[in-house]
Length: 398
Image (cartoon, rainbow, N blue to C red; front, side, top):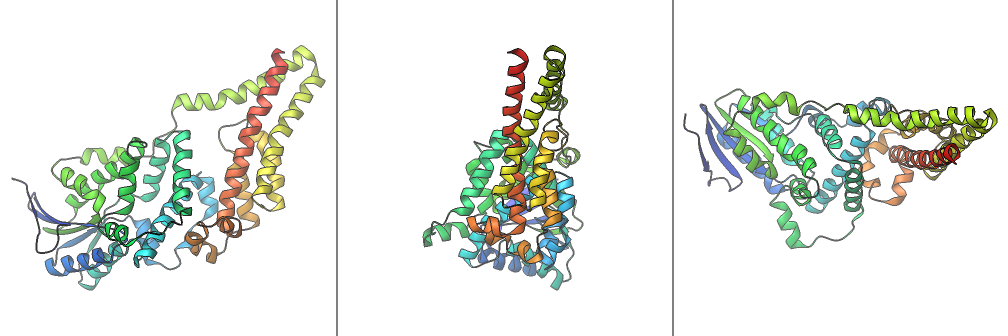
């Protein structure tokens, strides 16, 4: 069947109509911090009375929007065990950035997506959550970037969160006309091509396939404006065979696994060699140096984060051991201890979006302090590994 696409002028230039395999799809492009988008979504759904409404949300984000007690279901201990603290921090930073813009525009971020669900429910129209699981998206994005670019990305997000520059009326009007995060990703596309591929391009494919698979002959699909061009393109193609690939978290490559074990083996091997060549006492002195070189910086990092005393003791104890294995880092061990000794309360989960924008908030909010513990002790252990390793290799070959 011939595929056609036309602009639906009676609604807005943000609404596109696509005929595909017997389905009529109304693709509504929205800005996630725009009241105009909220009104447009309601108007199209009521006006068209579709068989189904597709929304750019996954189950995780949908529950977060619709349930007041969303934070109570978050198990930080499980997040840490699954090594997802980094992706959780990025998620909070992005949400805080969008929430701050939404506050200036007078609308809750994602209000148009929630309005789509609420309007569909009022009209007794089934909904489909068509976005990829946000946890898969963030973990694929995190794994797609190098350590240097991870650091650059986090610093860019932090800078945007702490930015207090006022937005003038002209800028506000522009923001109402576009998807803010998609615009941000477009600007970062040249610096982070792999990140843009995961956050935008792969989701365009996923959204397009899920919209095509949605039951019914008439579909209204509500998505961020930044996804419209990609979805329109992918609606014309069959990418169903790529869904398994883009919903899988890639494993750590064998080369990285080998590299991860190389330094620990070299450290342990060097201490053993020193024992044979220069005596047990010299080997013991080097081992003690390794313990102190790792433990002290990690403990200092814990102190800088104002961590619980048990966390600081844990940092000193764990760092010399975790530096000898790529399986887990000192940051994850100390973060887990911090959660056990000073668990965040619900109020701090709910206020994290505001607290993250102030330096004081990072130390006052117990959730954010867990991140500080994770970052500072991990950095201390990293420094200690290189200092201790340099000293041991020098003694071996010196």
